[in-house]
Image 1 (cartoon, rainbow, N blue to C red):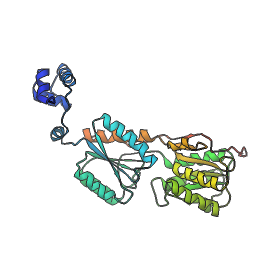
Image 2: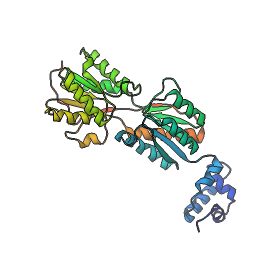
Image 3: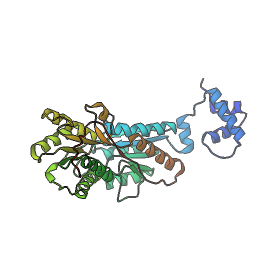
Image 4: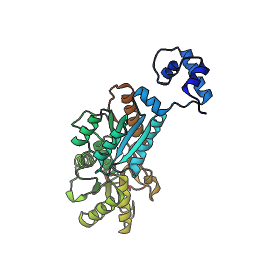
Length: 335
């Protein structure tokens, strides 16, 4: 028979109420008493019942996570960090794949599951989503996302600055004929800021911007392939390419090779994200590193702080950096 809270109380020679207070980190006992209770729990192998625990603290110890594409390498990196911290803090994670179309449906599901909080990842926070989230009366945080309309804690990199530095890197390697594979054109989260950073870098270095040298994809591999074909067919020749996502960059690399272009001898490419596949392709992809696991960890930490204490938390801009591998050739012509 599994040990009960009464067995713990008997072994520690305290009341059931005291054991309960220790379990839920409530005041009213000495440190000696706490150590006696914890030792009894360890000796007996007692596991508090989750349902009973929820009845006491009014929580289910679950958090919901919404991704527009849960199968992507990007989402996997974030989720690893989210789950790592959640599990350490005694929370379970419910993951929802919205596909950008089922967000309201899954918010309703999470409401019915009575989750304690929500991580809203990589998708624009539309008014209807914000209303549904506030109606749930649980805390929520944004990751790889930011709302300029609502004051919601977020965790992300500075996409505009990271894009600027990726473009600057190509320029400082001697490239002046530079094209871009951008994300979804209407995406204000990562799409627009990365294009703005690209254009600003060209402007600051006196390089003319050509609209034909931008092709829009969807941050996925096949989208990168389609957009790359468009660039090669329609744009003026270019010696370097900045792809606003690693999956698009790898899709572009495949198309370039199909067209007989060698990387980096004929075409230099820099990506964005530093996904695990960036190291697996040949040649390994030079890219902008986003600390995805750290971003997921921060999201969990902030959310659980809000759940357990109701204290406000601040937003975080995390650091990015360029990881040099083997897809950018130095032309030695920049002055």
